[in-house]
Image (cartoon, rainbow, N blue to C red):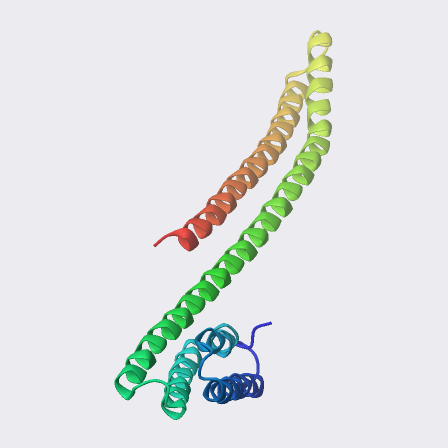
Length: 214
């Protein structure tokens, strides 16, 4: 559960719940002076830091330190100078915990975004590979006819040279040239598709490196 990108109402309710829990822990702390309640202040601080924002976590840390100080002063078990020292140490501990959780949450979010980008890049590469396979099939099917024409016309020309006129030879050579042109276009199309596939792979790897860079 994460309300960082959610509605403002959910964030407000979460903050309110965290501070209500701080008040409850502070009240119980003031009623039981012989029990160390400092670890319990971590619960609302963690809730505010992880589910809401960094500012909410820091605010919860300050609130928890203030209620802990009030509990120490009201119990009369701790001298005022030591109560303030304990409050400062408690604030340092809670703030450190809040910032650590915020950084951890951000790192997890970045890893999730990177994984999603890699998944999309892999899907695009798979789609490109499928298109390439389809193009190869189309090229192979399209190459059969011009290759057959070239072979048939050459055979006719070789075995019928005695009765073949110059005009017929030119016609056969023109048909061979047209078939060769068709084959050249098919091969060029296949080469262009290979270049597009290489560029797509390089782009996917570059996006991953950018996300992993400093």
